Image 1 (spheres, rainbow, N blue to C red):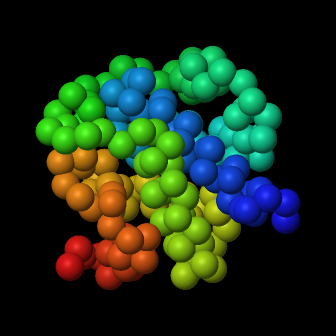
Image 2 (cartoon, rainbow, N blue to C red):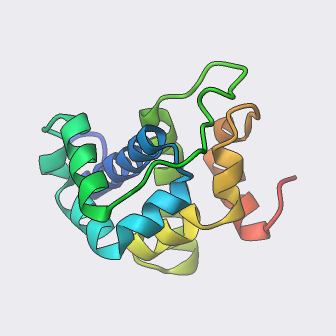
Image 3 (cartoon, rainbow, N blue to C red):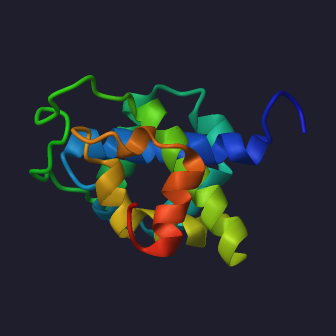
Length: 151
């Protein structure tokens, strides 16, 4: 391991941040973006994150939007936010931590855990910027996923 963080964890952080960036750009829910991209494209992003993060994120996102035929949606959690909006990097970190927790808890590979996270009810709670759920401690978010409820 070089640096402060495991490189593959950093790749996951970039992958989740790109997913959020694409979702904001296309006004889609995060699970719609993940499911439309599919496992092949998500795995490609994850495997080549160290290359993609060096490129312009608009170009990278446009390429994946075009290749996966992601259409414009109507989900806009940015304009409906009443408070400060977290960046796609902020939300990428929240999802990264959740995915790592799911992978460890369920003994799953990262890509399968990613699909679990984005297709869970917790994803809708994270993406509600009018609540403070996405600011909760990572363990609380993971516990909400595991328990199937928010305390």
